[in-house]
Length: 190
Image 1 (tube, one colour):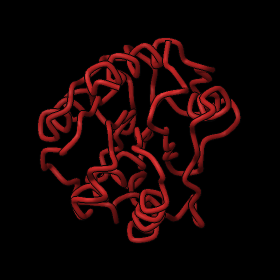
Image 2 (tube, rainbow, N blue to C red):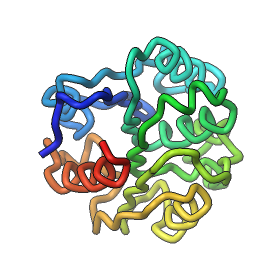
Image 3 (cartoon, rainbow, N blue to C red):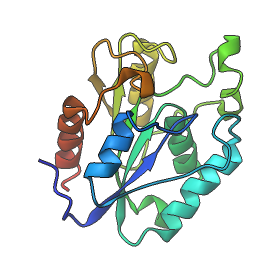
Image 4 (cartoon, rainbow, N blue to C red):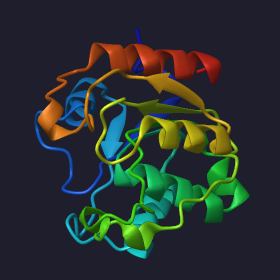
């Protein structure tokens, strides 16, 4: 099981609309005592500079190393943050658990609110990462998620047919996700 007594903290980065009480991320924040959540001023009309700034502020204030837990648009936020962060900030990241990476470059009108986050950085991440992708995610194809993982030097985990793995999925504590997270922590030697 994942130890809450490690020498790191979990930093939860919710996607658009935040994570409701039934979202796996909210459940994890309740059961992992060494976790905190980055809050955004604007959840529905996100601005990249604001969202990235909130992540940067949380990282600057972090007293210990961080394992990022990102969902949906927050995956793009985390990757964009990493592409512009200082080495001292990057050194604070022990690992990143990246779930349902929204394809911010999709031209469908339903992606208009997230397109300001384009282009998606395709540079290798300087810390261990796991991309968790569903085969039935309407916000990113499995092939695109796999391409993101390859570009970032991350492992890919096939979550099956779980849609976007957000509020509507009602995954609860999401035991399968915790197992995936545990494997990432093991790989990161945490």
